[in-house]
Image (tube, rainbow, N blue to C red; front, side):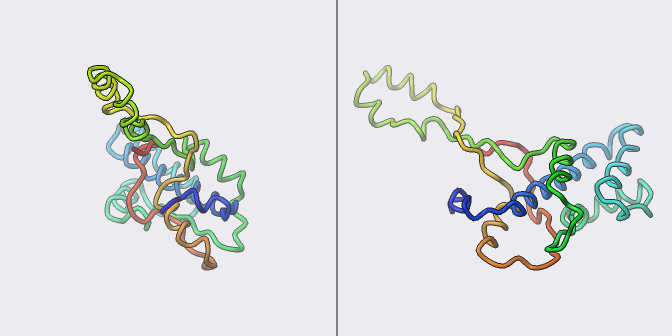
Length: 185
C-alpha cells in the first residue's frame, strides 16, 4: 500500500480526524504516565480529561477514572464523537489541542541508509577495503525522507474509507496500537 497515493483525495476533515485521534492517544499516554506518579501529578488527571471530554467523566472520582482507564480499551475511553453535522470540532480547536498536547499528524519517515545507497555501484567503483568501511558506517543509520507522512491506525482506516461514503456520527478513535514515537523505522 502506498499512503502517498491518497494525498490528492484527502479532504480537511480527514486530516482533522487523524489529528484528533492522535490527541486522544496522547491524552491516554499522559494519564498512563501520571497515574502512578506523585499525588500532585495524579491530581492533574481529572482536570485534563474533563477539559477534553467535558461532561463524560464528571461523575467519577480520580480512583474510579483510573480504574476505568485500566480496565477498558483505549478506544472505549478516549474517543471523540464526530459526524457530518458536528460543529464542536473546528480546525482551530483541534489545532489548539494538538499544540497543547504536543502532537502532530505528521511523522518523519526514516529509511535505512544502506537501502537507499546504491551498494552495487559503490562496490564497482571503490576499492574493496574502502567499500567495506562505507558499508560498515551505514549499518544502523537512517536518513530522513524529505516528505512527512500522516501515520497511525487512523490513517489506515481513512485510506480504506476515503473512496467510500463516511457513516454519519461515527466514533473516531485509534482502535489498535498506539504511536509511541514520532518516527517510523
